[in-house]
Image (cartoon, rainbow, N blue to C red; front, side, top):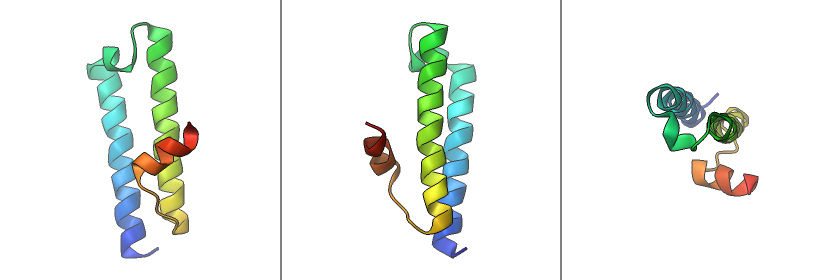
Length: 71
């Protein structure tokens, strides 16, 4: 793994933990109902997972590019 891959991997890891903390601290930012919050959380985690997977394989899209690919 190159230095850039490791940096991107670490960035993705931080993003995941930030999402988790946000779900615990401010769940309303994910939606109005518990079902909406969980669904939105899962969608955002999937984006981060794709980003990290791409970082591991050397294909480094930005987080925004990963979000666009899910649309």
